[in-house]
Length: 259
Ligand code: COA
Image 1 (cartoon, helix red, strand yellow):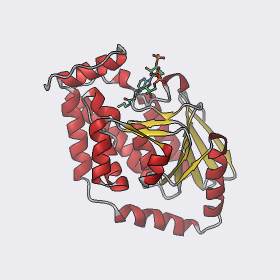
Image 2 (cartoon, helix red, strand yellow):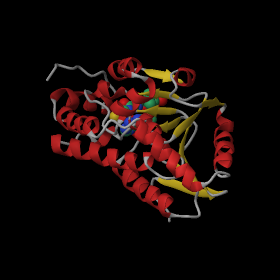
Image 3 (spheres, rainbow, N blue to C red):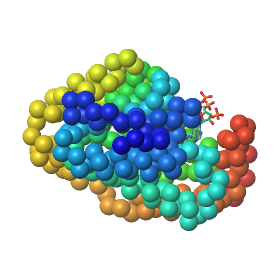
Image 4 (tube, helix red, strand yellow):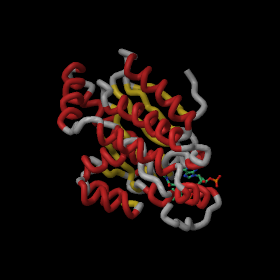
């Protein structure tokens, strides 16, 4: 099957999923989310495929976030619904019974950082940069980022990233435990494949059980995700979010007023 915003290919029972909007730094618009949901369903149900690699098109970005140009039209209910749609898809990825590995080849910001964190683990190229810059727009991450980032790197480091919107480079992400390996860009997919080739020699039912067990070990119930989606909806209807989103689109600095 072919998609508008995603490229897929299969080699050695590994599905490579490439988000393909390089002119928009692979930003996640509604079409990407809907198409990715179809790709993930197909991945999960296809017995011939044993693992997946998720990456971005081009050499600059993995994914530079949710598509901000779609935010202006959202009211509180629309914001909450969008966040819940993303959360459901990302939970499906996290709970897939076969490994999905993020090969992060550049910027992983906002929804891109969140999507990488929903994958089972992450390899990155040396130019990768991670961040949750939603606060620059008057928003918070809405696709599970507040929960997964805190679990992966701890509350203090997570809050510093969430509150400043600052980016961290690949080596800092490695030191934080956010990523497993940092490699030159040209070796990113090779290294990911070499790890998957080891996993492919193991018993598939044991692999599924390990993923389920690891997910259970860090699950703290759904309250955190529900709160995040509701906050995303509340914030998107504020004047400050309108200003932050407009400022991004108009390529100027936002002026926040606190309402
Ligand atoms: N949503 C929509 N469009 C985006 C985008 C996003 N999250 N991120 C980048 N783009 C678009 C830009 O608007 C630009 O489009 P244009 O060429 O039509 O103007 C194109 O992608 C290239 O981005 P540009 O900003 O020119 O590249 P840069 O190298 O100067 O900066 C970033 C790169 C990643 C620092 C910058 O694009 C950025 O800050 N993106 C937004 C990150 C963000 O806030 N993500 C969280 C969203 S919730």
